[in-house]
Image 1: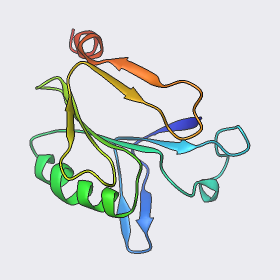
Image 2 (image 1 turned 90 degrees about the vertical axis):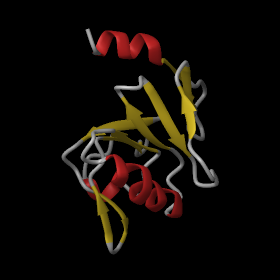
Image 3 (image 1 turned 45 degrees about the vertical axis):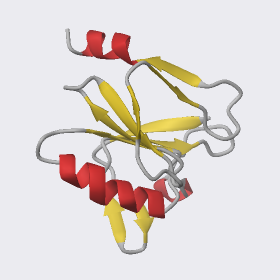
Image 4 (image 1 turned 60 degrees about the vertical axis):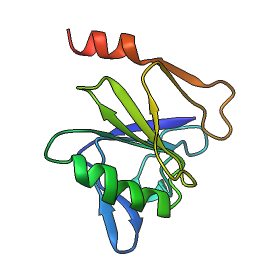
Length: 125
């Protein structure tokens, strides 16, 4: 349903705003990963990995921008707390998830299920 991109790559939210997320998913183009950047018109999911130096920026400024621009999902991965904060455009507060996170972009036949306890255990070994 989408193609995962890894930083460093800029994402244009509007004509004045560029962001550089840690990870993001863009839609496929005719069932394939985009061949040129101009084919990418939107992001399906933007993920930031929290660090002490970016926490305020990720949780306030970037979250507000992504919500305002209608990014369907914005995740902040807190490795120390072993959880994900998920925001959607209409959310007043982030949803804090520490068990299993489910992501189902529009048009997906099945959701992607990620066991966060297992993910963080393997990543931090």
